[in-house]
Image 1 (tube, rainbow, N blue to C red):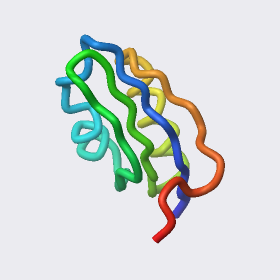
Image 2: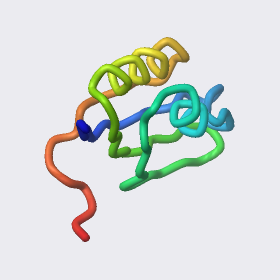
Image 3: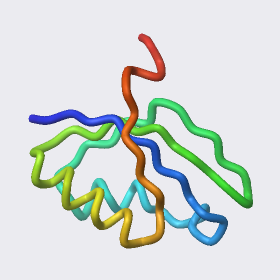
Image 4: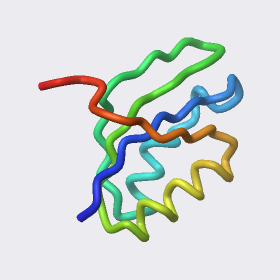
Length: 80
């Protein structure tokens, strides 16, 4: 199983859409929210994605096609 940390940046029109929920249900990807800041006109979320590399890649491509900006994150944002 692969793990990857990414940052999703949501435009205003997508803030209320269940993008992360749909990602985890349409693809075999476990999502773990590590950090987030969401308001009514913008939002960003740092996620840890876990699953098969192919599923993660397909999921990220799907999220990008919806209009969400996806950037890689280096290092862990929240230390446990």
